[in-house]
Length: 346
Image 1 (cartoon, rainbow, N blue to C red):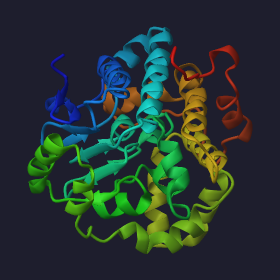
Image 2: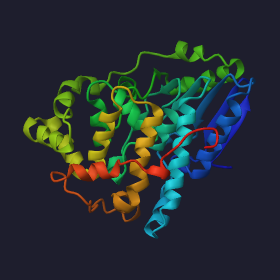
Image 3: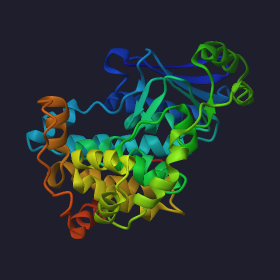
């Protein structure tokens, strides 16, 4: 497969995303190739650790390749999208629970599906160009691929803020919010990866880590905690309306562009996962929403407005200030026999 390179090099299992012109967007085939490698390498004594990276300067991985999802979904066929999400989430869980160290080197954009590949390992490395985000609410989805769990574990109400606004994090913010562990200048990556391949000694990554840039999010914590601490989306909107600060005004502008249903559900998911959520529970809850996203949510309209027609004028099903709690609960109801499951047969 030309979109991804999977091989054993020295003491490492190596996964390199090789679609730089497409910002290394994940296709279904790429997800399945990663999943197969994880199964093969978990018990392979020759593989001491995994190293995941990507070609190109612009992006580690800018998300999932959703063109086929849109094409099938607009034709009334929801099966492909549901299968994509189901199998991708199982891969995310396998990566999260991988029994050996996993190092990910994330330059440029790491968004959505890229978070599911890069942010569940033991050694998550960022550099000056790194820009991480969970922008799904802008296209009618919810933070998924296990990202809802990272958001739930973020300090204070940063998870709610990042999940609802899709704000981009530089290296300092990514480390502060729990999406990354170590700052290593990108110029140092080739030599470090070569040393890892030769030795399989993951402690070399910790030794290479440098003091990260400051986190602007850390300075905004008081305002974020005060405005994004509500129980429902309407609570958050009311708090922003009454705050009157520049921060609140900018945040409100962002929320006014995003899907109200997605934001309401994202908020509920983060609350459910805090403080004792697990990766399985996070992915299973995310799948409840994504399973219904084409038929009952805003996903197809969000993709049309952002990627197909590019008019940036989505017609959401719900009003920002009028979202009814039952709508959120309907999207997050258990799926019965269609529930996301995990295991050796998955």
